[in-house]
Length: 390
Ligand SMILES: Cc1ncc(COP(=O)(O)O)c(C=O)c1O
Image 1 (cartoon, rainbow, N blue to C red):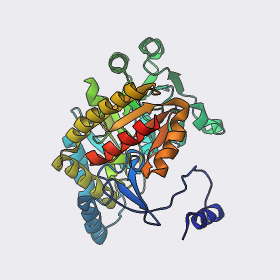
Image 2 (cartoon, helix red, strand yellow; image 1 turned 90 degrees about the vertical axis):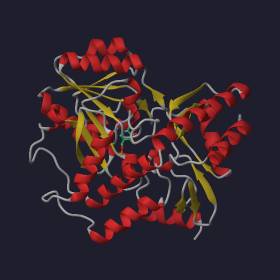
Image 3 (cartoon, rainbow, N blue to C red; image 1 turned 135 degrees about the horizontal axis):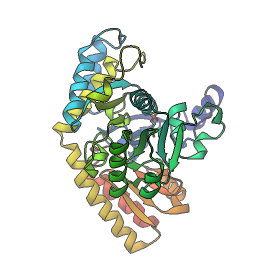
């Protein structure tokens, strides 16, 4: 089978709602992916910050295989040990007072749950979100997404409960938060927006304003969570603790799962029937989540993300300083953005030719979100490719 045959099948049988690279992937191993013709690629995308343990990590494969043989799915009408274990594992990594989890299947769904929880808990009607944010494609999450391009054509489905503030504009945030605000929702590093970290002052301002007005602080950790930024959660860089966080992506290491984690007091607002989903907290997904957390702990991947990420960012900055053509190098841990403007797409295509998968975020930046197990050799390969290009 050749790529053109696969593309013919796609155009015959699948919606054309994605722009895809000319590559049909077959299998993976650590940070490497192989296409159907056996060509190897180094994966700096990791399913967009999903495959934190890389591809085919034995601990994750083993956990999923064992669980699949025992029990794939049961309804939330019943208790399972797998869901309890993952709740306990999340409580072990989430700073207090974040303590209680509820599971779903994706990042968008996690944000939907967080928004519903905040509305019900505060009995208020307004939300504040940031421009250039991304929170997902379902109606509530999309309404919270501060980028017109994602909302266009769907206005009729979107709640008008959301108002937007420039990211990192503390004064604007102060002017907008009121006694009607149910929650402020934000990312610690805007991922889709181009890997743009929140400023410490802005995060502190949001935390204080929420505290003073009784609004909840929702932090979307869908992309930044699970060690991606060099701490378990992005908010830990800022010395604050939100009231609710949303998780997905890295939590399952490739198994679809999402979650919200909140304080005990906020969690009490959801009583039986308040919210739910058929697949949320499915034993297979929960077994994967538990294996991911255990493996990240065992292999010290949060520390690795921090150390390797800072060294890598410094080395990219050095290349940028020597060669020019880079507006900014941003990010934390193994979430790095390199702003090279209009040349981003050209660089992505050059990488692709040379067997490196990278992705463009914010329209002007290369986003690197590789598996947390990525080798030094692959980092050096990327740096050489960037240096030659610039
Ligand atoms: C910060 C953030 N929130 C939410 C989402 C949506 O997650 P999902 O695609 O799993 O619905 C994404 C996806 O890119 C994201 O980066």
